[in-house]
Length: 136
Image (cartoon, rainbow, N blue to C red; front, side, top):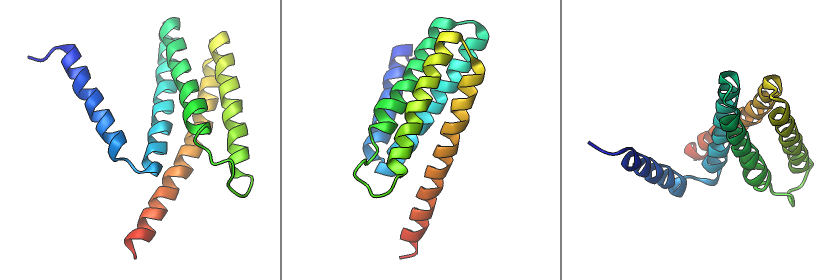
């Protein structure tokens, strides 16, 4: 009934609507989810021997980490958290570049684990903040 491009257009509108209505916290969650999804796809493509798609997925993950998560840090905030996260994001990008060059699935898994830890902590912060706001 609908063409593939029609379905893709509908999906794009859905994503754009979600982004437009998301809170800043939810936008960061979306970045984590997008990067993690790209890493899973990269790993699967690598296992299938599809090196072109693996490279594209890793490039997407790197872009989200570097241009989304790292770029979104408030470097003027007090404390070392922003600087430490920026360093960790730089480390992840370097590891993913090496994983891409050497087709190293273990390195992709390593970065997935690091990113999952940060994403889980970020999601818990959001749940705590929502609970506190609901109690007011």
